Image 1: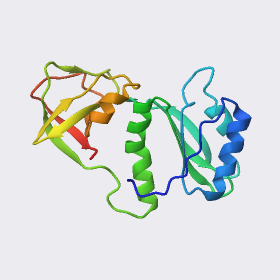
Image 2 (image 1 turned 90 degrees about the vertical axis):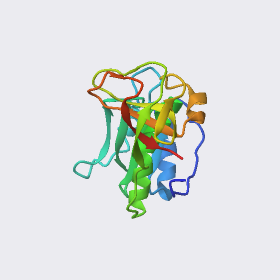
Image 3 (image 1 turned 45 degrees about the vertical axis):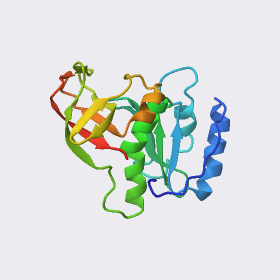
Length: 196
């Protein structure tokens, strides 16, 4: 849908050497590499360890950086370039909703930019929030809630958990709650990212 030809590699064991080898094997055919999972902080988050050894040490500013972004879902992210051709790499979180939202916000625009297209982002619109109660959002984080959009109104679907993929399947929009807003009331105008 974003315009790229994707080559999927199956799940890789939580072993930095195996992961590193798998990534290096894919560099020969990749214009952009995307990983999911293993970018947070935990016993099985080996992507950071593996990618620290396949960076562009010979290029100033090269390599892969890992950051915690002020967003929800999708707080842990990695980005940079790897290998002899300085292949761009985006390392997304592993929770399904976090991974999907991160794809829409970062990977899809990267693919479309590499293709030389002008319209790289999904369209956005202003909509009236149609909800039974106010939606809360954590202070200091831009939140992307799943929603359905029709005729200038958007309704939330499902909860806020990054593992709730059933709600994602029903959504055709993301409701954007800015980082300085902690609550959005029914009837408020909000920004939405249109997915379909």
